[in-house]
Amino acid sequence: MDSFFITPPDFVDNGNTNVLLIDVGDTFVAALMQLCQTSLDGYNIYLYHSDMNHDENSSWINKAVELSHAIILDPTESSLSSLKNELRKLNKTFVYGYNVSEDDINIISNPISYFIKGNNVREATKT
Image 1: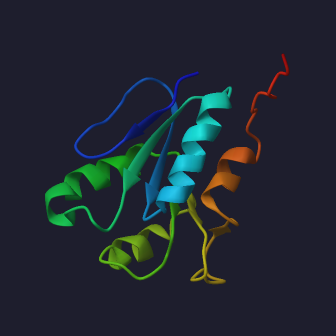
Image 2 (image 1 turned 90 degrees about the vertical axis):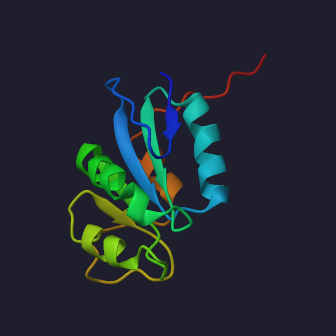
């Protein structure tokens, strides 16, 4: 299935699993793009980070949170810290990095681990 990487102001409605990434680093996003190319599952990956203007995108982020089956965030201090602290209370939020807390509901080693766990990724075929 196809996966899509989406930023404000766009949304995709196609039946894929929706996952919101907040302040996830470029290296993880690039690795996730590669993983999605071999995934049997399709994802709509909503990308949001502290460099984006939160005032202009507040309605977008609220809708992305509502639509998402999972939220993955790096809790490192940023201009989005108040938002991230609120989202950490949700059962669908997964937190990774050095600033995790024992109060966090779902802790993962990195963003990729969410997608690999239980994900059917095609084995590379040798030709």
